[in-house]
Length: 70
Image 1 (cartoon, rainbow, N blue to C red):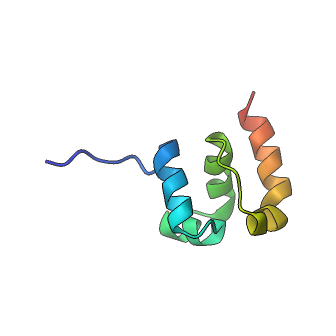
Image 2: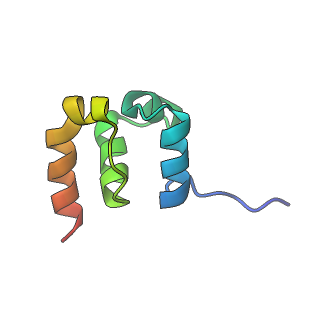
Image 3: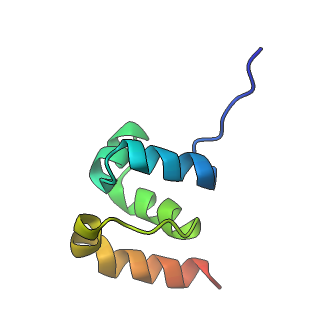
């Protein structure tokens, strides 16, 4: 039996974000979750957003990141 991979593990999440061409909306579709939840996971693991995602979601991401660092 193969070991299961936790998709919310920071390394796995970062790799999948790269595979999704650093696109939060695409990654959230892959993970079958909404964009705010995906931003929360990325912030929790300190995974920096792409330039395009920062423009679209930067304010929300920074807010979530501050909240998760407490």
